[in-house]
Image 1: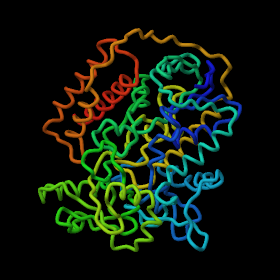
Image 2: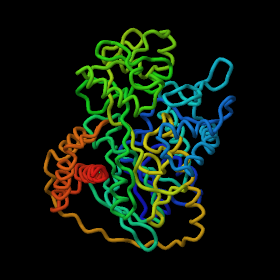
Image 3: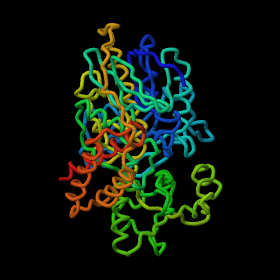
Image 4: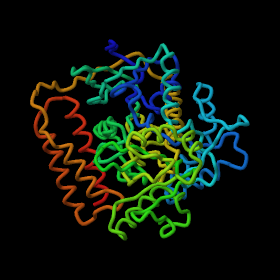
Length: 486
């Protein structure tokens, strides 16, 4: 592994779209450490299929229409200030991606092929086939690799952080060994919390580590219970990480069908399959209760097969591996955990209430999404507010000195691993009690049991390994989610 220095101006926890974009917009004289929990390409950003929404050189569209669609999806609970920033600054960040060499699909006439997704009144989603997140991350990582002031440390987990007079001391777990670095600024860009659930579209690293550490530092955690359940995850009924069948498949005309292979959305919303995600997920659960079955299907077999294959090559091939031909037959789907609207509460410049602590991307709560995220606004939020965090740090950095105060963490000598099964139980509790329609009858019992598990984790010294850290993060997030419901 690469050797790290003791002091950095900025430490960024998370190497997805938000973390990379922040690094790219920090002044070149600042020394930056970018942490990837595993390999740099294993993150939720790389799994994003649909695209990035934005009004850029878009005849017939405007930022107010984009804002209004976002408000409708979010039940008009969106933060008006940050929402205006999101839609009005989208163009500059999409254009920046193009300048970085990120590819977006184009029509025969050379214009960008903007697609439609649920909740959008215009075709405004820029995409690269059905692998937009991976393409954006490829372009960003290529740019980051050229920066002499940025060190990327893969397979590095942030275990603890301590506030100091000059910034932070950050403890790292690398190759089973603990070490620490000091920094003036700390940016949390650690992604979502999907692994708190039994079934999720999130990657294996999404355990809420940044949220837990920010909480321990005194940051405000807001609306952590605002969790989006994606209605069309592939349902093979036994895999924890569920393959996502993109919102764009419905945007291109797919139907949703119940256990009798009947379309059913007309019973629940006039927008049919193009209703926002929370509406469709609720409709599936209600239809399940009505029919007594959890068998649901997405069907785009009525569309031109070659167009479907060209538009959704990753989805098509992935489903073929599972025995389904997207162009010829319905494919089984069911809602599962997908995205977090709440998180570490920040202002319009991604600042928390803890001095010099920032958060951006899915782990942050900017308020732009309101109660429910509009499709393809997540990559946009990651870019807009990570750039704003970097710009704010650039302004603040003029006043810092080269002095770094070093904080001493309590030594970890324990060798006993945390008891097996805690994380499994936490996932089961959330899946059964806080899914699409919460189980209010058992919410208090679920909260009490999570509290007991947190006490078990905290009451003794356990070996400081990845299992312990992720269990601690998952328990903290589960506790905060259920606490908001009581």
